[in-house]
Length: 258
Length: 302
Image (tube, rainbow over all chains, first blue to last red; front, side):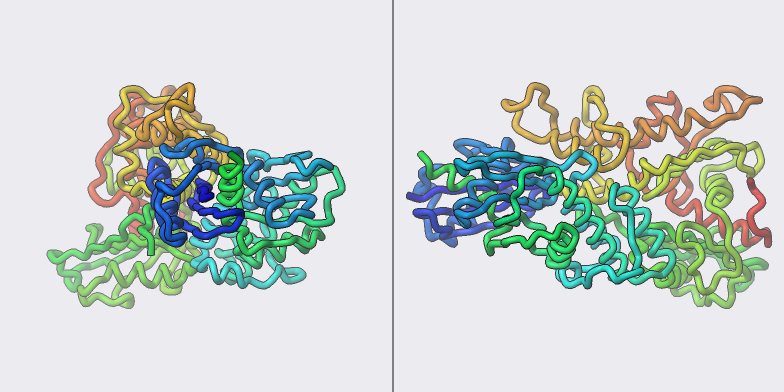
């Protein structure tokens, strides 16, 4: 059975084709405003091509992500939490906790004894757009995503920025730039601040959950951020190679339920 | 590389008519903002050349590039300029500057140059800060208001939002005006709230109780920006005059001055028609600095 899962995020759209529990095709593209449906169609077409299949072969298509209701061709929508949980359990049956780091949302959830979602915590409104913010700052500092990913950790006594509010953090970054602090040092400080911000979501989970914490989402591609998050949280995350496509994978798994 | 929807075009111009070698006084102003930088060169008080470019992460480099672009191939060199005044956020990085001055005075002077002597209210819509400045009949600041810290970065965020929504920044304003009536504005607190709400407005009508069109979504965001600027204008005080609307004409400067989605809404709410700038309204700071350089003095406007 062939199913499709599509994750319509704020920055990117990801599509996955699933065949008997294995990913056989992936597609990705920039998201957008009114163009989300078209972006999803393109991502799905790419995934189908990689899978060597046609849309007529699909027995179900499920959408997730912030733009899940923008899709004109999905059979069903599932929440981002459901998709992340399904993907994590599929990849790691022992998973006890999932942290999903998207452009817009930071989500943490735990599993109960029945392997269903126990607790789920979403970032507060002030901490929305953490992933997008890092990209915005990379543009300001004229650093590429690869350069952001390769940043060193914050040096002791090095520059820091506000870790509570991105508006203030941006101002701090601009002040540092005005003091001729290097772009890379400022970027390290911003990365660390974002990690601290993400930790606040993790800290809201009260049930012990540290055995197997699966890290998902597009921000996992940023190694410097993941490193900072591990240092700040003390959690040793498990990161699948499918981390960025996890939402789409979870949606495709839901599609294969029927 | 994907199209950068949030990028506005850089520009420069150098006069072909003015014989700078015959000029008695040549001065320049350089305004290094967080997102954009400008240079303006004046020959005996007339605009001879200007440049408007994206600042990037190196203020010194931006300043050098701006002045070189403004000089163009006129044959004039930096050494030929009698005085160069720097201003703006990064206005302490300009290697060739002979002095520095504050942004408010520069804007007041530069705006009078751009909009003419009838101008009394300047609304500067920058990348990080928004300022409302009230002027006396002469080039002096009477009162001013700057956005509070939480409201910083609204201009820059429009660039980023256009990139996220994949709508060219030069089109979002016009597009937002294609609405029969303005919808409720998104949050007016900070750009994080505003963005989250704006991104959440997209979606198919059958899933939403109040479906908005594309134009209405842009309107909702830009109206929120206009609304907070109206608050600044409203807090300007001129006790002798009372209502600031009767003190005279209004002009918009800065990057968002080119966004009719913001400016038209401010004009509508105030019931006024803004003056038209003689040159790029982003040049106000740099022209003001060049004028102050010509007066040989530092800031004296506050």
